Length: 459
Image (cartoon, rainbow, N blue to C red; front, side, top):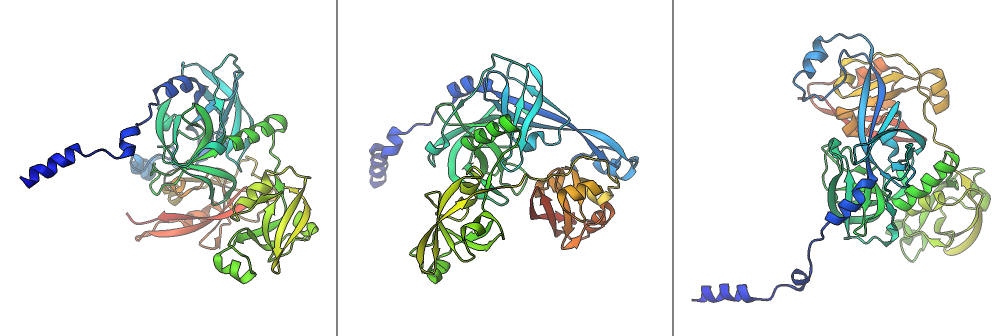
């Protein structure tokens, strides 16, 4: 009897308030109205390799056969890649990711109505991963630009793109966080979402429920190479600012003050007499740079820049980069237990240097092919352009190399602190062993250098 009573009580008990009032959103209207402004971006490029067959997936049943017995003469083959983009004007301007069109020989844009156009690159900026394309057409559907500052964590967002080439695929999720800083990507305050993003979604738009573009999908965090619930989008205001500069001048101008900074921990704040752990601690100052001329010293803590409070150290590079070079701004610092106001004239970040494409020694070996790397040796002109003495240039990366984060255009300088002086030496250093091991590849990407962990060997 008691059991029946408890069951009846459970059935008639009032539902929680959120269950009575909340309902899942319907994305159908949004997808129908905004889908036509989303485009498929496909590229072709020429890759040099000494393998008899183009590198493919190791899961291909014929992969090992061709690797072992295929002709080993140097050859060129056509590599294809897919991405997404969004029309931002009726006369054919398109926003996408820089990495989608990087080193492409030919770019084709496909609309939802199946029309295809050849596109040209108006400008590309690797630091923000934004590129602007142009197709020769008018009267096109275009997206409405929203305000990422109004996004709230937990708010629903929708992505439309071409994952794995499936055009106009709609996925939805929520904003997981805002203002995310990622390693080597400190100029962009990324929007983090749990929207399903996969290869081919790159460069596609992220919409709010009003149907406004609030971001450009750029990358995911993954241990497998597939979607794991953590995706990152470039805020649309950042993307549009970059696009306007690219359209106007073909390049992006960013501020620079010439300091190396670190986070202010609770312990450091106490040691400096700061009331709370805030600001950016100056480790070193570039001699003759903007900060040096303004009187900023090592051990200063920058509390405000241009009257904006610096809560975390990772906010300062974005604030400085967004400031027009030549501008005079106020900087508030903490020095020896007190605040001090200074005036600084912001300098300019030098343009990112990349190697010009040129034929090099094509001697890729079996070990490089197995991890999906196609590399060439740097010419003397390329070394001068990149300011490096040694290293090899990545022509293409897929398989294990791509999953590790190596990109086309990277220069591999060292493996486990051993300098890479030739393609043959790199092939030897990454040769697999009976037991799996992790190699630390020192990679130069633009003006930055970073270590990339690469797992090789074993079964």
